[in-house]
Length: 339
Image 1: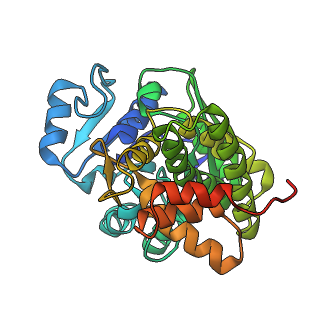
Image 2: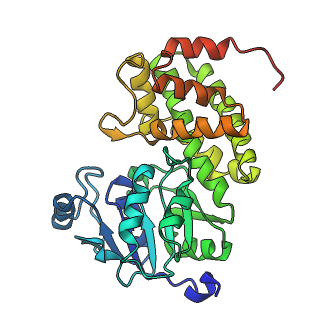
C-alpha cells in the first residue's frame, strides 16, 4: 500500500528523537503546526529540566516551548506516534535506530534530520536507518537552517525528500508553518549529499576565516567547493537541480558564511591552532559533523574517481598529514585549468 495514501497526510502525533538544539527546534515547529509532540533525549536529567522549565537552557535559552511538546523519559515516546523525526548526530544514527526497532510501529515514517555520512561504512544516513528499520519508510529533511532561528519563528525554508514523493509532500504539509516553509522532493540522495558535503566545505571556509585570507578567498572557495559537491553528486545519482536548491547551494552558503555554524567554527579553530591536536569532535564544545564526514567523503570520492581537492585538503589536515599552511599552498599551486 502506498504510504502516503495509508496516512492520508495525517501526522497528528509526532515523536522527536533527540533533544539537542535541532531536535528541540523541530519539536517546537511540529507543535506550533498543531501536532502533539513527544520529545526524547538520552540525558534524562536534561530532559527533566526541559520538562520543568519548558526551556532547553543548554542549547536554546530564552525560548519557551509550546505546551504541546511533552518530554519523554524513554523510547516509549514512539508508542502510538504517526511520524518520527530522528534528530541525532550522523555517527550515532545506527545505534539509536537499533534501539528504536523494537518500539516504533510499522510502517510509521522516519524522517532523518542529520547531515553526514557514516564514517566507518561510507553509508548515507538514510541507508543506515533503513538497514535498522526495514519496515519503516525513511525520508530526509535538510536545508539552510540554524536551530536558534527556527525555534524563534524566524523565516526558514528547508527540503524534505522521500523515494515516495507523495509521502514527502504529506510530511511537508504536516510540519510546515507560517515561517517554516518546506519544499518536497523525491531526490533522497541529492538532499543528503548536499547536507553532508557542505559541512566539510564549511570547515575549509572556517580555515580561510581563521587565517584572515579575506572575503575574495572565501568566495572562491565556496564557488569551487560547490563545483566539487556537484561532481560528487553526479557520481552518486543526485539530481543537479536538487544540489542547486536549498539542501545544496542554500545550505552551503549559510554554513560557509556564519560563525553560528559549528563546522565553520571548527575550521576557525583548526586555522588558529595550525591543526595541532585538533582532529575529530567539537569546536567550542559543539559537535562538528564535517570532521567525521570528511574521511568518508574523501574515501568515496577517490573510489568513484571524483576530483575534490578542497575536501582532500580538509581530510589531510584532520589526519595530521599536512598543516593548514601547506594545504593552502597546495590548493593555490594546482595547475591552471578551464572553469
